[in-house]
Length: 125
Image (cartoon, rainbow, N blue to C red):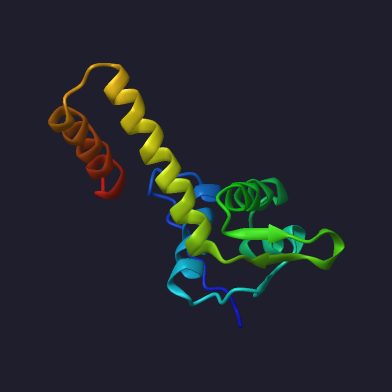
């Protein structure tokens, strides 16, 4: 299986973030199955025409998100991302809800602010 990664130089998004987003979406959609071995940082960087540090940064972010896991010298693999992503999102949502309540925001105001943030994050700029 060959990873189809495309970069948009006019996107206004850093290459590592474009790489992170695309791998994350491929993993969550199932196009990259759980257990799929990703290329090495250096090999992938050379294949994509990026600096090794750029790919390493994307891999670190993906690992922090629970999308991939590094198994030492055995390589980097797609993890069971759906569960980890949902757990991270649920924890972040819970933290936001608790903080909004402590700040005295009404439920409607807290929800409105969350919707504004989601709209800003998901809608094209």
